[in-house]
Image 1 (cartoon, rainbow, N blue to C red):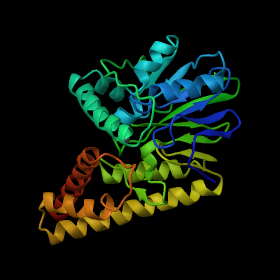
Image 2 (cartoon, rainbow, N blue to C red):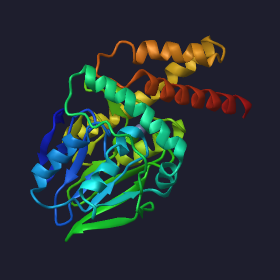
Image 3 (cartoon, helix red, strand yellow):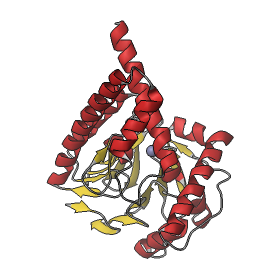
Amino acid sequence: MRFQDTGKIAEDFYIIGHPGVPVYLLDGPKPALFDAGFTALAKQYEKGIKESLGGRAPAYLFLTHSHFDHVGSAAYFKKVWPELQIVGSEKCRDILTRPGALQLINELNRIGIENMQSADIHPIHEDPIDHIDVEVVIVPDQTIELGPSLFVTALATPGHTWDFMSYWIPEVKILIASEAAGCDDGTGVIQTEFLIDYDVYVDSLKRLADLNAQILCPGHKIVLTGSDVRTYMAASLESARDYLDMVEAFLTEEKGDLKKVIQRVKAVEWDPKPWPKQPEQAYLLNSKERVEKIWERMQKKSSN
Ligand SMILES: [Zn+2]
């Protein structure tokens, strides 16, 4: 199935807040949250988590990576539930201690807030972030116990970012892959999400596909279950290959003029999409990274 709403997906597993920028909740002896969405949606997440957990507090917040739409409400959650432990990779922790990173998160947040206002989404939590403390550094393949026979395993799956951790709960076959699995825009079109290295991203994608998850959470807009997981992973791999072919062709035609190529890619990918979609500034930042990485890859190949 393809879930595009908030609510209960399976026994003890919930999509909270907003389907476009969700927080995932796995209930159990030690309830766990996965990612912290937007700052602006903090109150919606809090409400959904409290409704699902009653009076209990979540024990862990697992962060996949340090992007603004995945860590936004972490500090807010910590205020609501002081016993909550924030878990992330070492690189994720380090990035979030940099003032420049927090500044960028707050800038992108502002744009997110404006989009929410124009989409008439309420209430909006407008406080900027001053710090996000990753308290538990998790290393690749480390497991954290959530209860008897319920463990979360961290999988280093770089490609979208270097700090990326996917989370795998083998007992219930739930995979929180976020953008390591690409990003369906809700229509079945999968945006290829590598930012730092195409080949590393594809390797991570293949590793995640081999897990044969029953529930796949790609981070935005959609959650897949059953046979749709396999279909999605295959489509995501194909989309990565198609993206590479398209950008290589544009780079060849435009003789390496990156600005022109980014505009051509945007005209294909971003312009035709209806709102709500990734803000233009965030899309352009990411697109620039992808096009530059493919250009470097082409240079390397031709010099070999
Ligand atoms: Zn991201």
